[in-house]
Image (tube, rainbow, N blue to C red; front, side, top):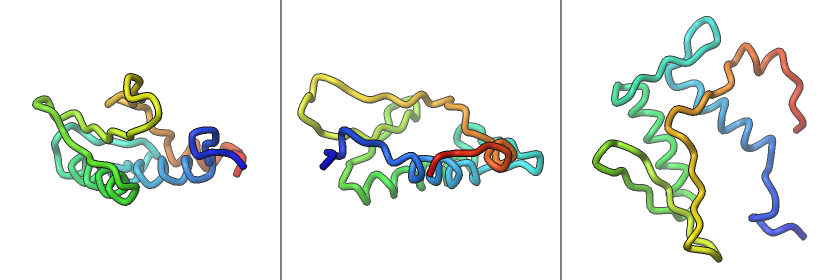
Length: 100
């Protein structure tokens, strides 16, 4: 049996990215989610809720970076997700096959 640290559920990850891309979705399939405006604040709330549902303790720093620390076997290591991540567009999602 795979440990959670050994496996990424690709379908779930894709679903979460598509849910996140709904915040600030544009008619052309892109995403417009500028820092600290209503849609970005809602996206942050979504991520915080996901983190809390997993038992994480989300926090932000003085420059509004959101952190969802995940305790593990190696507290000296950390996982980072850049603040300016390119979220796949809905148009790309519709035209691309993804393993599920």
